Length: 72
Image (cartoon, rainbow, N blue to C red; front, side, top):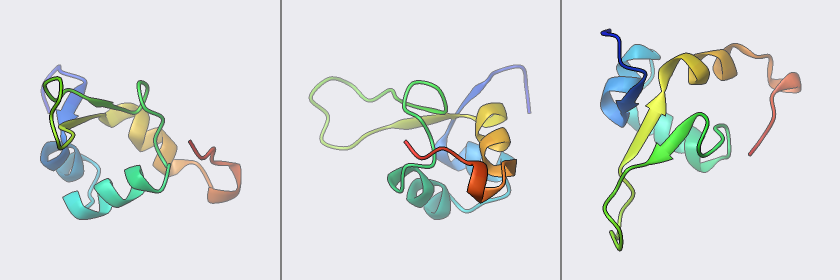
């Protein structure tokens, strides 16, 4: 991947070796902290979020053993 740090869901899923569906599911389950691991870049008053994931931070979160992981 290039020098950027934030990726849209499909790009982040590829980088993390997950499906986009699984990445969204983990987000909904509280695996990632909003503003640190994931951010919503959708326009104001949008009905659906447009998510971007910080791949490096998400990767570290996924590598952390489940018993030591924080839930957000």
